[in-house]
Image (spheres, rainbow, N blue to C red):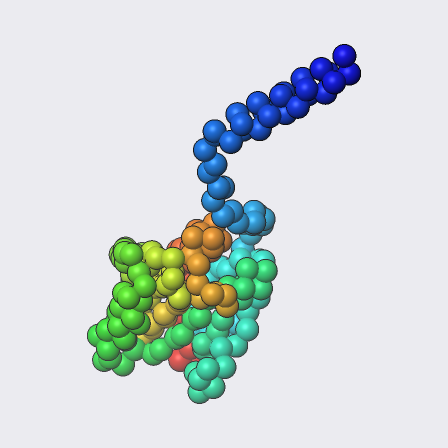
Amino acid sequence: MKWMIGWKWFFLFLITSLAACNTDYYPKPNGYFRIALPEKEYVVLDTSFPYQFEYPKYAVLEPNNTNPEERYWINIVFGQYKGKIHLSYKTVENNLPDYVEDTYNMVMKHIPKANAIESKIYENKISHVYGLTYDIAGAGTASPYQFYVTDSVKHFLRGALYFNVVPNNDSLKPVIDFLKEDINHLIETLEWKDLENE
């Protein structure tokens, strides 16, 4: 009688094993860690620069030391995301087309890695802020969002978002979308300042 109970368990195990082998196995796709994003909160850039805007409270401003002669170049650093917005300012002196072309060329350098580049015109007649934003789609693009703004007479400000990580914009998409909102807010709150009397 005992041997019959043992055989029953053996057959039950055998049938279960064979039934399990008939199902197809599909591996789960690679996942990414959930990224906690802070509440939107902004402060005004209060400096003697020829421009002023609101930037996120969760960011830090630092000088951009790539070109020490350019004292109005700064970085907006998002340390928790290893991201940075490089801002470079130039005075317009009958050379606006050159600055616009330089910006366009910088964007076009991303074509080999980009799936698409979408440009949008920005215009604020009250603040005299006109420009373009470039949304650069593609998993391996080094800078997913760039822009320039100008008053067409004196001021030209260019910005580019970079990350200090190997480009994988699929996993960075929530952060990129989050920081694009901050860049758009920066552009919408931008005002030019006259420094001739300083």
